[in-house]
Every structure is written in C-alpha cells, then in structure tokens.
Length: 169
Image (cartoon, rainbow, N blue to C red; front, side, top):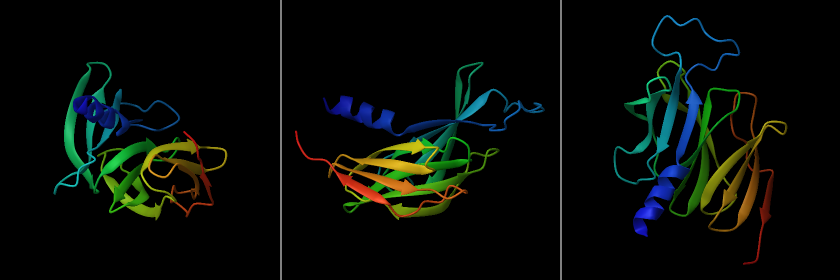
C-alpha cells in the first residue's frame, strides 16, 4: 500500500510542457523540435532535491534527464501556465502551504523563481488555471480549503482573493 501511495505522489508531481511554445511551428535547425520538457517535483526535504527536468522526444520515446532545474523543498503538484513560459508548484514546509511561480527558459528548461505566496490553506495538493479569470485555484487536502489566487500578466502570483472552506465527509 505504501508503494501505491508513493506512485500516486509521483503522478501528482509531474508536468509536461512543449519545448517550443510559439504559435507557429518553428523552423528546426536543431534536435529540439518534437520534444517536450517534463518536470518532476521530488517532494523531498533532502539536500539537493527540488524540481528536476527531462526532455521527452515523442518521435523516439526517449526521456533524457537534465537534472535539477530549481531548488525547492518538497515541491509537489506542478502546473504549466497555458500561454506563458511559467511553471507553478505547491510546497508545504512546517505546516505552511505556498505556491511558487517560476519562469521557464524554453531553450534550457531551467527555472527561475518569480515569486511565491501563501496558498490560503494547509496541505496544498492540486492546482488548476482559469485562463479567463487569470487565476490559479488551489485545493488543500489538509484543511479542505479552496483558494483563488490572481496572476499578473507575467505569471506572478497575487495573494488569495478568496478562500472557501468545505465541510463534511
């Protein structure tokens, strides 16, 4: 059963984004066309852990690791912004859940922290993006809260505008 939970945790901490996000198909002078970046949250507190990345070649099925691209303690759920080269991650350290926004270098896959904000509940576990509202919704398994966090035009996070509590069994 413990192995099943570890596998479930792995599945929850995976995000795939196109290596090339242009509207038009790029002219390919290198081997990066037809590949996607795959990001993994390690959900670990050990030194040297964080978000790691790999390139996935859909033509060959090859997954090539490039290693850690951002240092973050216990990164869990990852979500790519639908239009911007921004990746979001939840993390909970010492009972505080936060959401982190990272800019993503499409060429190297490296992540650079833009900002972070408290998520409005405990045990943040799921993110979804509402493109029309330009906001992230954050679900919290620990407290049962759902938060609505606005995002700026560059993907930067604002503080939660709304936090709703859910009760019941």
